Image (cartoon, rainbow, N blue to C red; front, side, top):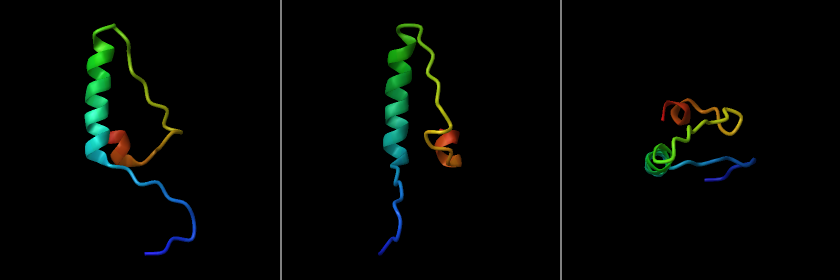
Length: 48
């Protein structure tokens, strides 16, 4: 496979594991996690 420009590949399973761990840690300290859509506005990422 050949690509002519950069692309971003994301492991949605790893993303979910990371979000779960981050939410768990944040809730222990009454922190609220927020996500900047400018970081990645792909619908599958936003759904997670």
